[in-house]
Amino acid sequence: MTILPLNTWINSASEPLLIAGPCGAETKEQVLATARELADTGRVSVYRAGIWKPRTRPNAFEGVGEKGLEWLKEVQKMGLKTTVEVANAQHTELALKHGVDILWIGARTTVNPFSVQEIADVLKGVDIPVMVKNPVHADLQLWLGAIERVSNSGITRLAAVHRGFHYFGKTKYRNKPLWEIPIELKTLLPELPIICDPSHISGKRELIQGVAQKALDLGMNGLMIESHINPDKALSDAQQQLTPADLKSLVERLVCRKSTTDNVLFTDKLSQLRNAIDEIDDELLNVLKKRMTIIEQIGLYKKEHDITIFQLDRWQDILKSREQWAARLGLSKAYIDKICMLLHEESIRVQTEVMNKNQVE
Image 1: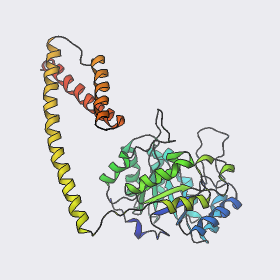
Image 2: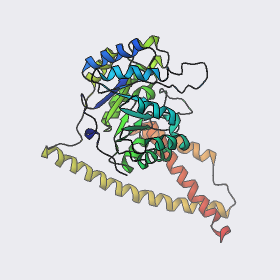
Image 3: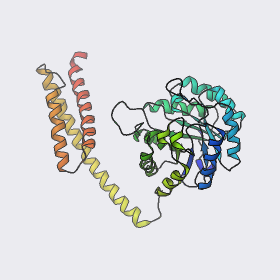
Image 4: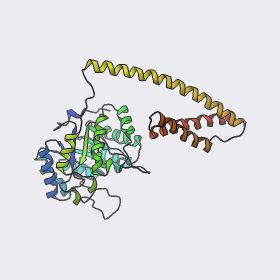
């Protein structure tokens, strides 16, 4: 897979790359007024606007369609590049016909390999940047698959967009960030630029700042933030859109950290600390090996006495006691709960193997 660096295909007005614009293009006046104010910030490089809006239920605002692409031509005259979401082959053909600068494939489309392939087929032989948003649910393979399909069509100016994942459970976010998934994507495709969409993760404008900062702290290459000239009157996603002035203020408060430094004292100290971590991890792995050895003995002992693997009382006692121990050490409950869950899952797996071993043989 050939992926060109972000700075070879877009000149950013500022660092990091900032993509901004309304959730949906509603009227020509709204599109141009928002674009004018965003251009005046001196921060925005790419103007985003939803032309076709995939809504969950009918009778909601579903976008203005092709006529909105004509409005974007006037936005380009302001010095901004333009990007729109395409969900099928027809959208892609129309966007190309009207000279849109960058395309993006949305979360609802990424989940459908048939739709992604239709778009990829249209893109064969076309030299245009494409951004691929993560699928609605947490499936890294679907995300990778969509990126690969676009790449196979010959597109080399590629980026991923992290917009969070639908989460069945309590969370303050509209879509849970699950930062480990874009980190894993970056691990698999180090050359792939990743842009964060704090608006769709947050769902509320007051949460955007924190999510944007976290994205930059994790080394993401840019931000896509929704901005509307009058957010409270927006026809879609009103609560997560910022005015251009508020967007500028937010960006000015962001801290952009470097990934490397020439400071020798810093690198020497960091190396010492990392070596200490390596030693601790080596000790930790040896402890985990000892734990698993005992787990195997427990599994065998249960098998000999016809006792079930899962013991609810014991599991509840583990959670309660480990949380108490962790609290005394100043460790967070969430952190310990995750560790306990991983250890418990592995314990169940090991004991299951012990239970089934002689039966299979």
